[in-house]
Amino acid sequence: MSTTIKSIARGRPRRFDPDEAVAKAQRLFHERGYDGVSVADLTQALGINPPSFYAAFGSKGELYLKVLERYVSNGALRLQQILEADQPLVVALTQVLEEAARSYAADPQAAGCLVLEGTHCDDPQARAAANGYHQAAQELIRASIAARQPQQAQELADFVATTMAGLSASARHGQSLERLLASARLAGVALAQTLPA
Image 1: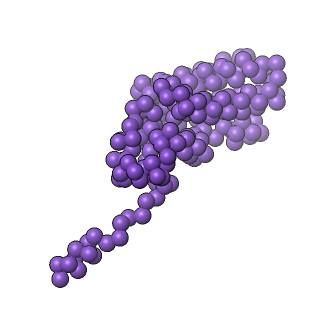
Image 2: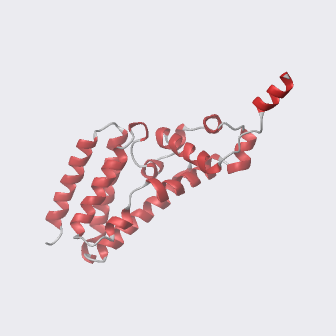
Image 3: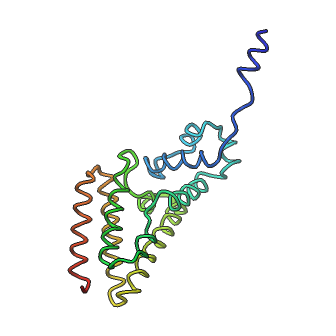
């Protein structure tokens, strides 16, 4: 009888869910940054041993690539949707900044932008991956501005990107949502003064 109880209690091992693992890893990387997370941290958080980790993901860097891809498709800003909406350019750009502020402050334990913060990590491959996503976002902003204001596209895109980087860093340092939104709105005022009516 005790054998039966043991076998029922033991049962089949729980199936490993790679999507759930990537979500957990995303949380860890967002909280601590790429450099602050070790393979040991990941295996513990995912409940797997190192050989299973390497079999599933190849390396910490390859898992980080999956995390960035997931973040950009699910958890990052709705840049394209906002920029393509039928509204004045200054309204769209201000909305991008305000949404960035809200997103970066949404979780105090995982504040800031995962991509922007990843551009500062020590690992060259992880940094290059984060930079790739960052540059793609910058180009999307620049192209959207260029469609309406070609002469000012680069300087305005640089201003928006710089403001977003500042909002991310400030959120990481614990600045409140109210203060982040105030900065985003002030940047919107500057955009309104720069863009023609």
